[in-house]
Image 1 (cartoon, rainbow, N blue to C red):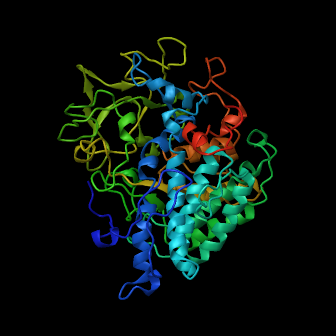
Image 2: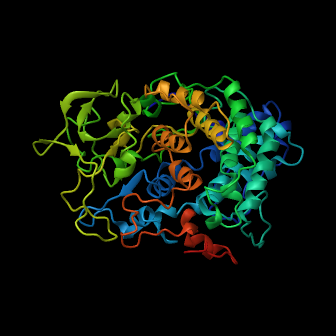
Image 3: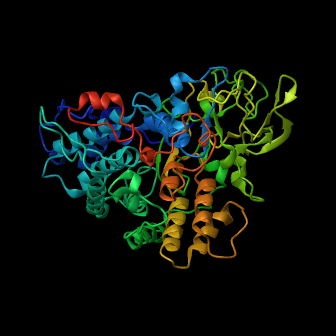
Length: 538
């Protein structure tokens, strides 16, 4: 567990607003005076106190369910069942097969995101029209980020730029209108946000966070503005926002606040990561005790790891909490981890497994043993029968490569399976690859230099020619593996309907409907909001 995070003091936390769970919520706590006039109190500290709950509102969602939806619907991961164990009513299998239902647990976070938007709107309403743009900008930026999450994952989305009046019915706006609103909103707040990059601004909206978000919106502009989800065609789409995307990337690059080489790749995702990672533009901070919810290792680690010593995390203490082991890398995606010398290959456990040194995070020469034999994770996955349970049987626990990117320690994990690894949302490496992609899509040169910056720090072979779009998609897969971007990338590159385990045309219930590029809206939201209709195709 790390102690390098800044947490709001108890006195200021008393000012934080309580949460809400649906769209139509009333303000239950108001300030009676303009915060900027509170005697002896820095007005920005008051805003900080009010914003604290909003900054970290989605820690639980991003720490598990959002991750499951993004990762399992892409070609990165598949879900497995073990003689029925972890089938869980098909929630994971449905996501991997692109046949989700509105009641799947992997998608039960729509209301969590809208609650965060409402919290931000409560703060903005309480600050009032007299508050300076600098005071309101953080709430507007985080509100935009939450709105983007809904638009990206669910398509049409309410534009919640104020708290609805009592009894007001809030309708979903067309996805294109939401993209246009986000563009306008972010362009308004970007000049008002802080440019500081330090421990105090870590995990909070800055100019660079807002620019990174807008750059991601721009690179996906044809996806978000298509007249229907299924009508986006990667082969013919024209992106009118490429120059704007490049300009935003340039501003982030030229600010000199971020870099790739402050530490080796594997340490960026370790349990003690934090503000010292200069690759992180915006991240969700976690602590296994003080800010819980991060549980990536639970489904990714060997199912029988509990109480095993020695183990491949190299810990001297046992893990006393159980593991799932039910999310493994697809055979297709595993092929990306084959570049000679690439440090990112260490993100996966493949073939014979060796225990790692918990200080260097590198493999030792000590084999990881189970039932008297060295564990060997196979690339190939064999099902006990070809059906939608995706079941490998009780003996199939060594099938599929396993992610070890989110390294864990017992002191964290034994506390309710929580982790202290901060999860990056926007990274400098992503910005370099996004600009490279914009250049290639625009028919320009210069992408190779940006591409090779990423390759060089990963110690991977450098390109000798300008990268193709396939090169960029593959590189994004290696660099941003297990960071919740692959579904977004596959859709933009026209590969979301591709063939990857178990999403094969021959597989029962594997769905290839292009309307499934977005998820169904959870049933709770449809029940709460009169007039809402389920997304077409579900």
